[in-house]
Image (cartoon, rainbow, N blue to C red):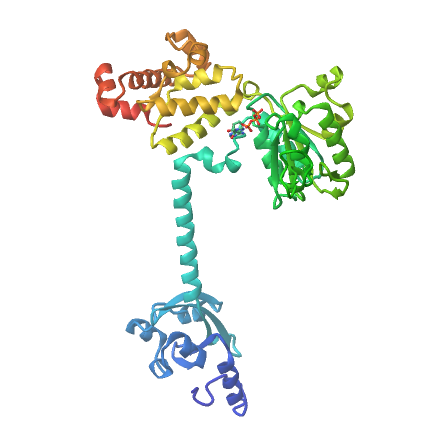
Length: 470
Ligand SMILES: Nc1ncnc2c1ncn2[C@@H]1O[C@H](COP(=O)(O)OP(=O)(O)OP(=O)(O)O)[C@@H](O)[C@H]1O
């Protein structure tokens, strides 16, 4: 292919054929031109990569080939001018190739040849494009999903934990979860003890095994023992003929969550303590011992320490259960969770009933001021009720149950209250918020944008503009 004596000039002509066969073995394409730019040699890989036969280029100058449109980029002139390696991307026959042009100097140090290595990057480019498309699709989906409801999507398994207090609880929970320790979960009714227990299980090494919840108050006292430990055939009248496994056996390998443990009678407290200490149970009516491997979580809204002091709860069981303790605070002691929770519940019930109800800022303030004796359950039920019964898109203060709206003084509007509520802020910001609160109130009262606009003597676009989300 290369005329004898042309390349490389000093190479012994006997070695030249070997030299070319080596170049032909290369995976990368090789393209050689002289300092004038005439094409001297292309190897087989170059022809394969570009789909251009050697006849079309050999003997032609690279500049001519550029003009003829065979290439759209060349490196030869720049390599000759600079004496340095030059890199370019070239489109040839619809394929993208990357060129690395290397200078070969003569004895006087002049660039005599340019050896260009050619690598196909079409596939690489296509993959890059595909990745970019996938990335933008993912971003698009993320935007869509987050616009549906940011809190619901980004909070772990629907568990809202925005306040510092809740974050601390989650941190403690995640630390305890992977251990085998029994955990006592304390907190008022409706604070989320059940949710905490489920998360403890989920984050533990037992997560693939059963999570069994027992509400100690719902099992009749006479049946607690047989429910927990099971029974043998004929153990008592009304028992199944074949006998029955108890909840301890059902939970084997996993977690048993004893809710309302403070309600357990003294006899059962003793039986439970024995099961926990010995890691084995005996079915009612049987003498056979069955080993069990169960992690115990227990919850109560009672002050168990007091029950111990009063002698109604066994102290040894109490200490056996409280290897680790998690206090779930009442909602009034973690007020930063109130509005995120309210939004999650609004979203959930709006979706369920096909509505798009939202709270006015005054109504939100009322929620923040209320003491929530029934905690998260009370908030959830209240939002449920509001969504179900609301005929308007906005829930204002007056729509809230009296104990909540009344407590916040919703019936009257006072600029003094408003100032106290929002604290020190620039006047412009205060006016903007005040304006928005008035418009929201009007929307809630009049039930539609047109009617509110008419009442406030502005046009509809003003209402939309001033109430759009910040
Ligand atoms: N952090 C949270 N994020 C979202 N929802 C929550 C959270 N905590 C509790 N809830 C919801 O509040 C309701 C009450 O929670 P849960 O049943 O866990 O409370 P509890 O303390 O176990 O109540 P009880 O003392 O009556 O057994 C449930 O519907 C639960 O899904």
